Image 1 (cartoon, rainbow, N blue to C red):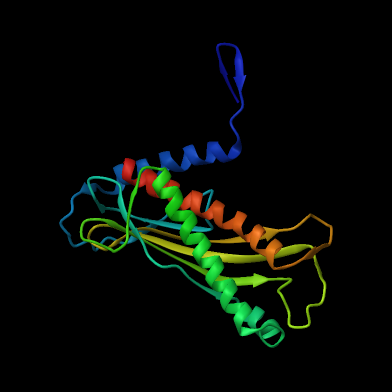
Image 2: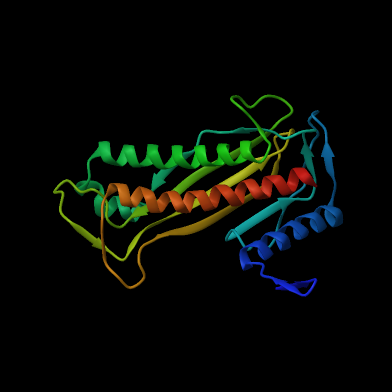
Length: 227
């Protein structure tokens, strides 16, 4: 909370955290290396620096980066996979059609979310990884749905919808990694209450989680390109 002309303005912890990480990234680049706004590939042998992030469980950033002169990026196709423990428990209880549909819909949703937020933030999103643009690679992993659509169509009561992890990396114009990270998130239910779930409810709650991931990933890309 800060005082402006005797009027108190509340800043949410989330907004404060975004300001902190933006400052952290700026200081890191100033202290450890340089950002080269070039479209010609340069050899980048620098290792990635692990830094604390309020948005991701793990976040690493390069000491130097080759960036395009404007906001140009290619978002690669996003793959997804189920948690091995989920497959062990539910493979025989769910159809292959259902499992493939979930992986397709969830990965496509995250990809669309990222692209939409990039465009809204002023990026030109390319259909191919052309020379002189950034490349964003993302994957959904360890997807676990506590109440999947089982073959018996039985009613399922859960307190938590599910969980998943995301991994991502942003490559510079030289195709060396600028930053990478991973995060595990929970698609929540109603705390301490059972809810009857179905395929639509599951997707809705996971969509909220993927929206948050897309927002944060694009924010970090914005911070890097803004310098």
